[in-house]
Image (cartoon, rainbow, N blue to C red):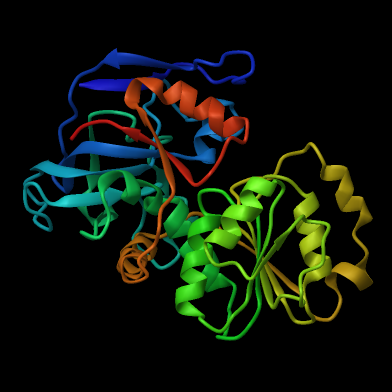
Length: 337
């Protein structure tokens, strides 16, 4: 099969083509696994962290990719959940211990980091960690739902909103534009305010139904009850804490934060940023139940998934575009039909 392989980690600035297209042996499913012919695979910021060495894979070479949509073409002898040609999706959780806290378990294994992922024509996954893909979505539209959508759903649940509560979103890329639509569906009376760095992102937010959009430094029409942060830096976090209403909650939906502006944390003032029972929660991956619960909701909205597609062999170009911040919606590799 064809696959994009990562042989060594390092900066994309130093090596803008870290992935190499290669012909590798087809994988075979273990007893509890299914074999998927990959149709599309989303490109995620987490891949940048893996490739640039901030979250390095334990073994190399490895095939990245964890926003996977495809069809079942074979199954292990104990795998009976799906039929051949069923369309399924796989997210960042490849396998774990199956408990409610499996997303933070030592048994957690990440698709495309700890095991080979979806930048390939074929991949395997335990059948329990694949989810049926609703017919409402094509392959390209469905791929970003597997991570950006599912983790966005988890962050929205962790926000603890009641219908009518104001919600803020900082950052408006692959996950943010999906969270906005989910919030409008699940909490129809809740105003949604988007803080974004570019005019393009702010206009996009308004197109999708945001009640207000502005820069991080600007004040929204009212103080949000909850703010979900999807940025890789600290400045929006500090601003969000200051914008929250008393008793509000900040949910940080990021796998890491960069050190480039960490010194700003020294400017946190207890009385302005933390007092009056403000809370901070972080999102750590997703469970397989999150994915299974989220996809029917995505179909019911139905979510409009903004995408830019690239062929498999252009994976390096997609990663570099993502790193430069050339974002409107989500980037997806098209692999097989």
